[in-house]
Length: 304
View 1 (cartoon, rainbow, N blue to C red):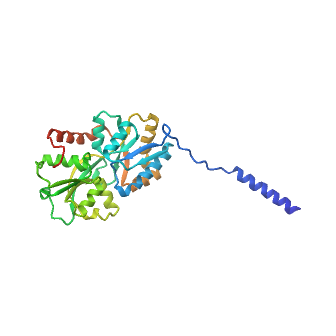
View 2 (spheres, helix red, strand yellow):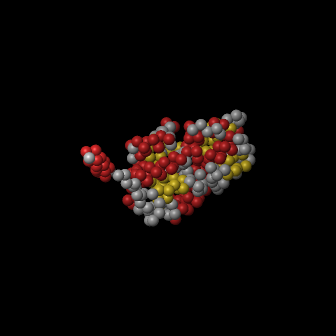
View 3 (cartoon, helix red, strand yellow):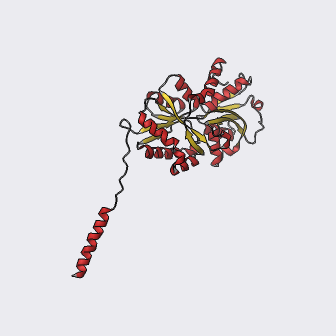
């Protein structure tokens, strides 16, 4: 009998202890106007092999803001501009030239933040460069060596891939007949691969993409050589549709600006070779704006 009583007491104690312990409740994320917040990507501070980092940023921002967030990475520059302008996406990491084209076209878009890279080359400022690359074993060592060669570029509204090179050619009197042929690749990574496998002679590529490829031990990035860097220019920013809810806008901005103070955030930044995010003004992109206007004035919008 005493054993039965003891067993009953133990059962009651065990059930009481279990019921008083805290239960984990999964956080229910909010939607924005009945759907996840959509952030798109056309220009990156990492290369294509680093796109997993954006998934981590998406999860981090979702946890920090309490909103469901989806990242879209399969759009080109023009498509993302259209989606931003119409509000079909709420925010996007885009190149500085597409930002200028949107802003100066009076579209509903505004800057949120921009990344600051860890590499001392970037001077702790929201800037980057366009790197002129050739095959590492080529005989090309200066710009003049590239006359009559094949040029490959990622996109005509890319700043580092087209706008800066175009301005460089104008300034150096190399507008007409300098290149043999120009070919669109669709991405900086594809341009680097083309130069590495010698299907093109040279390209101007985003220094951030090349940095990331070299840091992560890319096979093809190690087969190219930088013979000139032009810039700096305003780094690709994160922009938002101006009609985004003000409270949500502030939550996103604060989460990114404070990211380097958060242990999880710091780890993500480290993987992306980033120091932090900071606010930037429209004037950070005046150099890009001026170079695009110079190309119009020179009647040289297409490199040929």
